[in-house]
Image (cartoon, rainbow, N blue to C red):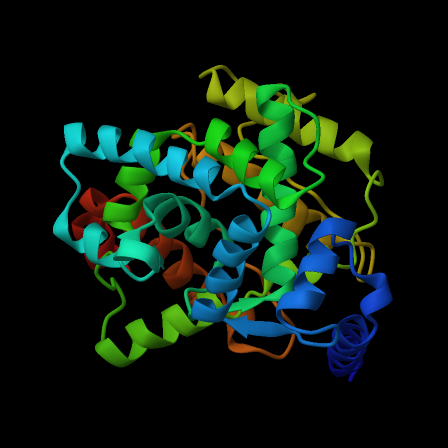
Length: 309
């Protein structure tokens, strides 16, 4: 009964967060753009509509040339690397109407950061996730936090690693490692159900900074290949707290901030969020979901993971 009550409270909190837009943590410039693009009370927009509106915004503000400069730079890089045909087709989904020029930067860099569950629908909370990631990129490269769409995309362009993006894009559709096709599809559905970005709306900027500092210190040491820098020298960072103390919200923010390291090839990032009363609360679901994400990120591991799972 206690677990059921917790599940009810969590569901009520999630519904309240989605209803009350004034609590959203979206930056002012993104909130204004979302209102003009999707509508004040809209919670999502089709992918095509979202990017068409984004490209139109650049045209209206006479900054489309800046976006095309990114493309010129990427095309040179991809020409040297040899862009796979599958990625060329992906890029053609987002293009400038005049001449039908595909936009690799929006397709292969911005879109994966934005449409986390790959459902071709952009949710308002996913836009918040992009904002958090861009702000982390800004800190990493020593730039001021973005205060416009132009700034946001410029920071992402400066921060990401082209080789890492190519590798990530090539590996994004790894083979299901679950024991059956049906179970494999179920694993994908569970991964897509995390809704990490929704948790971001409950985060109050500036809070728990002491804990973020602890995680950063531990992570930086691990990236450098040394023993973790917490008090015990452990390679695991274990955070314990009672129900409703903010573990999920904190973990969601950490997950978004870690994307900066994942996009620069420094770490392999996988995650699993439990939820009381749902299938993802089961241990088997956790193992399968983590294994699937590892197989996506590191296809060479898929063959070794399959017999174990």
